[in-house]
Amino acid sequence: MVRITLDLVRKRAEHNDGELSTLEELSLHQQDIERIEHLHRWCPRLKILYLQGNIISKIENMGRLRDLEYLNLALNNLERVEGLVRCESLRKLDLTANFITDIASLASLQELPCLTQLYMTGNPCTTYRGYRPWVICMLPGLEELDGARVTRSERLRALQELAEANTTVMADQQQAMEKRAAERETCGRDEESSNEEDEEDDEKWWAGASTHTPETRLAMHRRIARTRKDTNTRSLADGCKKKREVRLFTADGRPLNTNAANLEFTFTEDEENNRFVLDVNTYRHLDSSLLTCDVQPWYVRVTVRGKPLQLVLMEEVRPGRAEAKRSQVTGHLVVTMPKNFELS
Image (cartoon, rainbow, N blue to C red; front, top):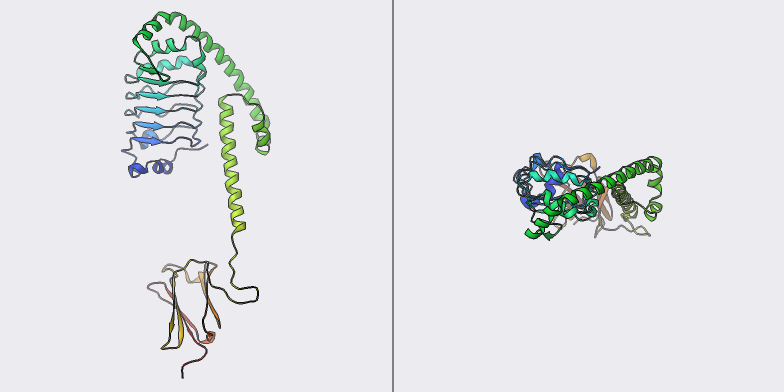
C-alpha cells in the first residue's frame, strides 16, 4: 500500500517552498494511494485537494479541513459518500468514475452549506431510475450536477417527481447492493485461490475477462506497480552489467589516461627541479585507507574507493624517488615524480 508520507507531500508542495502549514493547494493524483491520512494535521489550510486516479476506498480524516473548497476523488474505489460533514467550505466535489452504489449516503452532503457542484458520472448509482431528480431534491443547494446546470424549472419538476423517484431509486439501490455483495464474495474466493499464481502469470490475467469492481481496479493497480518495480529492478541490474569497464592499458600493454574517480587535479612540469607534479583533490575528510598511489616509469595512478585516476607521463620518471604527501589542511594529495635524467 502506498502511504501519504511527509516527503511526498513536501515534494508536491514545492510551489509553496515546502511549507505545509500554509499550503492551500495539493495534488496527489495517480500515486496508488489507498488511504487518506495525515493531511488534516500537516496541511490544515488546504483549499484545493486533488486525489484522483488512486485506489482510495473510504473518505476519512477530512473533518479538520474546514477551508477545503474543492475535492477531486475521481477514479478511486469509493462505494459510498461519507466523512465530509465538517468540510463546511466545500463548494465542488468530484466523485466521477467510482463505485458508489449507496446513493442514500449522498444525504450526508446536506450538511455542507456551500456545496454547489457535484460530479457523479460513471458511478453505478447514476443509472438508477429517478437518479437526477432525487439528487436535486436531496441537495437543494446544488447549482450544477454532473456538468449540467440545475435550472429553477428542473428543480420544480424534480419536486413533483420526488415520490416516484424515491421509490425507484431505493429499489434500484437494493438490487445493486445485492449484486455488489455477490461480487465481493466471488472476488474474495478468486483472490484466495490465485494470489501466487497471478504474480507468475500476469500476461494471462491481463488477457482474460474481468469485472468492473473495486477489487479488480485494486488488483490492476497493484499489478502495474509490481510490473513497474520489476522493470526498474531489471533495468538497474542490466545497467550494472553493461557498465563500461575502466580500461587502464591497451591490448599491447601501453597505459591509458582515465579519470573514473572523477577527481579534480592539476598536472604540471617543474622544469627548474626537473620533475612532474600531480596535485589531486582527494577531499579533506576522505579516510587515507581508501586512497592509494602508484608511480611507474611511464604513468601515475591514484585510486580512491577503488576508482582510478591514471595519467600517462610525457617522459620517464624514477618511481623509487617519487614522493606522495597529503595535506592535513586541504586533504589534497601532492605527488612529485623526478624525471629519469636529472639536469646536469
